Length: 382
Ligand SMILES: [Mg+2]
Image 1 (cartoon, rainbow, N blue to C red):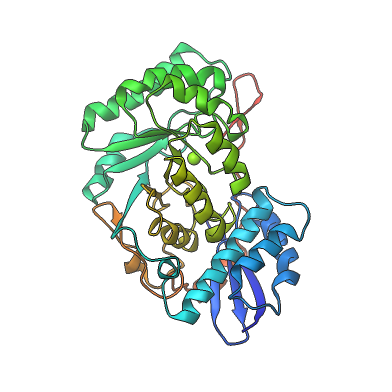
Image 2: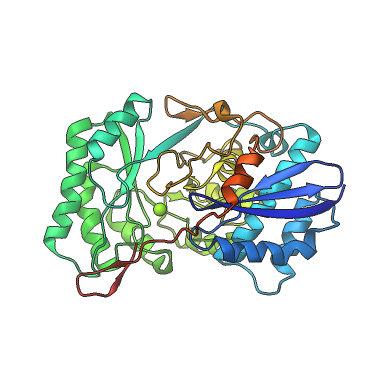
């Protein structure tokens, strides 16, 4: 079997799907994208085509190593996202050829169902109590929300009070009938992280995500030393070579590689396994589309240390497109009592609605992160 064609489709809300075709008619789907830089990743995918066209799609390990090493320069958000989506599509092809779901090819299930959580609150957290109540009725008991709005490098006691008040209200309303993680989203710089962690600790959040930016990962062990809140990070790290240093330095309790950013299934399996050796749990990052989520689940269901899976249903970024818009087998993605079952169809288990994808890709807009400013006019982390 030979790879014959790669086609990318940029679709709303801010995703890109990749279709890889073969000379035997078997087709695989991947999701290579960096949110806000879809066109750049699209070009990177096109630049990798010469390594793929005419090659045997079953040799995923070799194709992965070729894409990673043959360009001399490697790593980073763009190149690793391009590899990620291609890798997913190759696994999808392999599963379809062998008539097995990807998790079977990876050694089989370690669990019967996977714990999922839901985003609440949007960019600027408000009405969270109401949103949680509604989702709770639908069976969710675990949530994630932004911990703060924009926060100055050295912000005021009022800003800290505001962040604390919101979390206090949630615990007051729901007691310990729910769990929630707080995403600092890189908005909190090291000088404020200590204060916030100390103030929030009493509410026992499930975790704090990106307590500081990955660029300041040297703070993770120091922050972990002074708080009992489990610290999470990883959505802005792109290969096991990056994760290696963070694991070795210590501090993280939860690692969150993104299956569409960190080299795909092939790489994230290795990252998951390295994390297990350090007693670090796995909670793959996934505010993306159905193929990315299916890839996450393939890794979750074979990784003992997988504890939580993010998913983007109803997430505040999804303007103009929802997770299941491009899926035919929507029922397979049903979340029951906060859990998702293995996707049992061969390959990644997503029947992509190709007509819908093609239609949506026509005149698809370019999603951009908002640019936030501090009161003094300087740019703020979003
Ligand atoms: Mg995050």
